[in-house]
Image (cartoon, rainbow, N blue to C red; front, top):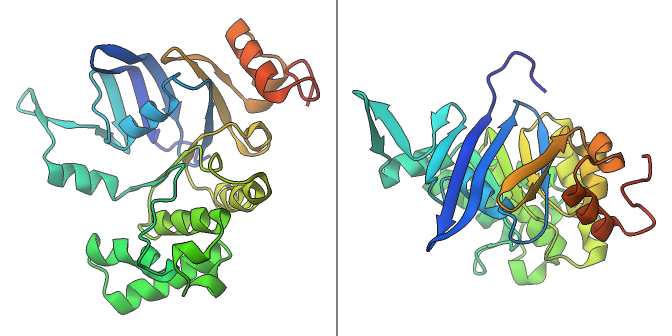
Length: 267
């Protein structure tokens, strides 16, 4: 963590809903520069919705959400809040990399082309330079030898690593991961987690929605448990996992970890 730096994310009483159904009911959440913050919780607890709000993909309907020093979705000017234009949203998202459950790669492009296209079309990077940088990022995720392959020629783990390289190619200040291993076969999970561990070791600020409890314990600086659209409990991962304070947290961890690695086990 970067001591003394301004927080990358400050969420205060963030609320959001769809069609009259409230999804976020007052989320308070802070992420420091260089921190790896992991979010766990049951399906429907608001984890993915919160991540989408951080990237401006869903509107915040109440409270305050500041990301990279900006109030997401609007600008205060002359004493009034002015909604962002699509161009302002696009400029904001350039600084945030997002990796989804599904890889969302362009099927007709090679791995190299998938990684290079963002810098070329969004940042205006010259194509030759973008391809050079794309190769560097593919090498960073261990896929330089697969640069010429199209997505259907890659395993799920390799496709997700290409997706990570694509996000990194935009040189983001913040990386968001929405259950990046949930669509993978079990034997492919570790190769993606190893890339994420490497990013954490480099000091990348990361928010990771995950069910990979061992990853959260080993790599995370903070762990937040979401339920019913709020942060029920948060703290250092080892402390939360070893001795959760709230019954909802205990019940969730018991269901995820099972008897072998239940929350009562000291780790």
